[in-house]
Length: 185
Ligand SMILES: C[S@@+](CC[C@H](N)C(=O)[O-])C[C@H]1O[C@@H](n2cnc3c(N)ncnc32)[C@H](O)[C@@H]1O
Image (cartoon, rainbow, N blue to C red; front, side):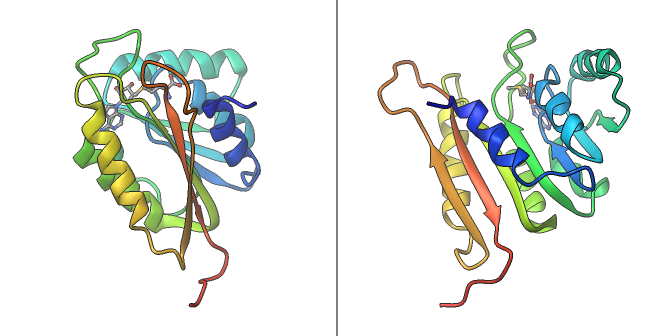
């Protein structure tokens, strides 16, 4: 069976092509940025920690990829850089190798999600990896679940992929697809 992160990546890879603009909302060590850079025309990657940008830049240099704009700003400002996107990924929580008090926060996560949903093209997709074992993680998890559950079903489909019989709050993935056609009724 696929692990949640594999599921998230495959979900995005099914729709992203070399014509597409995509967003990595939480760059971290750059694993998702690199993954998306191989698939897309252009990646916009965000993080609020300089060390994330440095790590990611090294990773991209090593792979010889130049189609990424690394942005040292919160993902809640993504609409200043991107006007449309085919896909996006969020990896919530903290950067394992860094200061564990720097975490994604419900208010800015929801603001970014709202903006990304709005500028997502039809047929576009968003994957949200939810880590919630840390302090404050539960509140963010609930805020995200609440937000996605209220997305209009005529415009979006939202699915959860989650391992149920594993201890220690394993991460799970929420997947959003913006429908090609507005679904009436
Ligand atoms: C779980 S890590 C991301 C892991 C990353 N995707 C990878 O492949 O290594 C979460 C990241 O979100 C960043 N972050 C926290 N608040 C943010 C915000 N408002 N906007 C963008 N990134 C943020 C943290 O600095 C941290 O690097």
